[in-house]
View 1 (cartoon, helix red, strand yellow):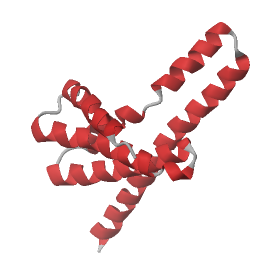
View 2: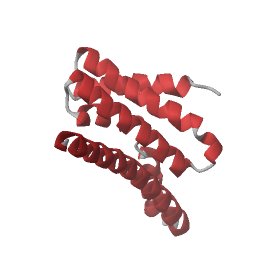
View 3: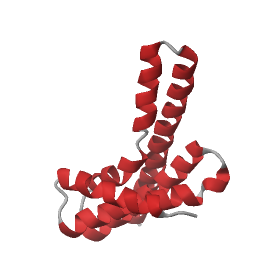
View 4: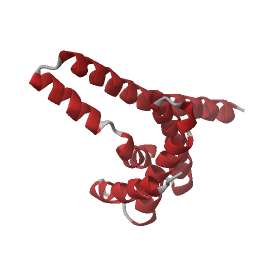
Length: 143
C-alpha cells in the first residue's frame, strides 16, 4: 500500500494551519491529523465504499482532534478543521457544477449525490465522536 498520499496530506495541512494562526507544535500536531485521516482512509479500502472510507477516516480524525485538544489545552476546532482539509470533496463540488453548467443532468445528479454523501459522512463522523465525548464527559463529571 502506498502511504505517500498521507505525507502529501500532512504537507497540505501545514499552510492551511498557518493561515488559521496555528503556530509551533500546535501546527505540526494539527497537520499530523490530516496524515492520520489519509492513513485510515487507505487502510479502510477493503470496505470497497469510498463514503464509508471517508466516515472511518473522519472518526479517526475526530478522535485524534479531541485527544490533542485535551493534551495541548486548545479548542478542538483548530485541530479538526486543519485535519479535515484533505478530506473535503472539492473536486466533487467542482465537477458537479461543471456538469450543471454544460447541461449533463444525469452526471450532475450522480456526482452531486456522491459529493453530498461524502460531505454527510464527514459530518456524521464528527457528530458521532463529539456526541460520545460530550456524553462521556458529562457522565464522568457527575460521579
